[in-house]
Amino acid sequence: MSAEKKEFGRLKPDESAAGEQLSLPAADDPVDLSLAEHAAKGDKGAFERLMWRWWDRIRGYCAAFVAFDPELAEEAAQESLIRMYKALPRWRKESPLGGYLYGICRTASLDVIRSRARHSARSMSVEDFDSLSLESPHSTGEANVLQEEANQMLAKAMQRLDPEDRSMLYLHEVEGKGLAELGTMYNLPVGTVKSRLFRVREKLSVMLKEMGYELR
Amino acid sequence: MSSAEKKEIYLKDALKDAAMSTAPSFPDFADVYRKAEQRPRKIRRIVFSAAITAVAAAASFWIGIAWHSQTSRDIALIDSWTVSTAPVAVSVSTTQGAQNEIVLSTYQTSPVNLFVQDLWESSAGTGL
Image 1 (spheres, rainbow over the protein chains, first blue to last red):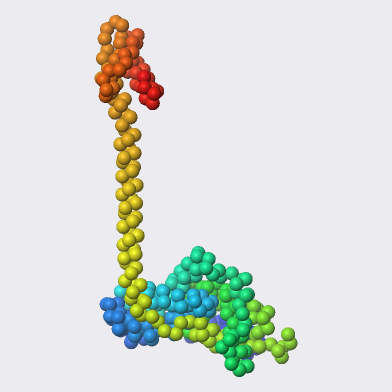
Image 2: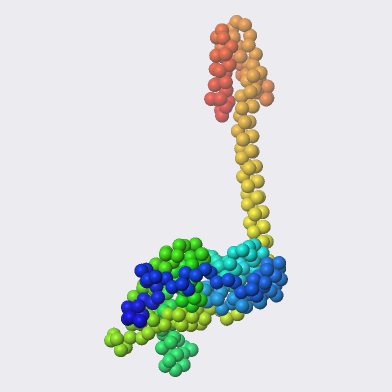
């Protein structure tokens, strides 16, 4: 792979999309579907089992959406669960469960950010993000310190991105969501998703470069 | 910073690490159920206060209308005037009985009606 390709990753506007990326959204797990059907009928046990199966995806997505702010991430994840519990009875079986759950997380996280901004308890301004400390009291050993520092730098750079963009990047990079699936979830054409992901990644790469990091 | 010093960030791993280290570890289902049950009550409370406000607004509107039309009824009292032959005299009555008598010289009823009505309206605040 060329150095340029390494730098900006897999997404280039002129790059022909890989079959996997343009494939239709992955089918939902039958276990999840069955649990969702029971949960929709008010079965709390089924709801909890479904949420445990989805917990890492929900909390990861919410954390990425709120730019890795622990307090906001907790609030967003909890709010998402409440909304899912209330919204599951209205879920139509023909719509993908994953898209439905991520959609709830998305609106819940967005509302949490808006509500926080409204109350001005904490603003999401760049100045605040710049003031983040790089010291971690829990770090032990040099490797941990470096890892911690890298994570904080990434978080800092991510905070300067649009919430929708960073959540989309997270879903693509970590959850492996394809362009078509993201397009369905964000109600955007595949081409727009592709160029948006490319721009986000490029922006992130430039910011990290300024901080002395190279994005891989 | 030289290229040797440049540190690398593997996006996928770094995103995952950052997310997992900042996200809450466990869901609080008790809180979920409690808040989910509280919300309809909250919505009902909001709907109830909105309904009360709407009723109050409608009531004050109709009271205002009724209050305003009260003046028209006062004017309607002028309908009780009496017209005599020469000279033309108009007696204006109020709820307390006849209080004033206005002598007008005209041969037509219609201008007299209008004149009295105008007079009543212009002096409604201070009396005739």
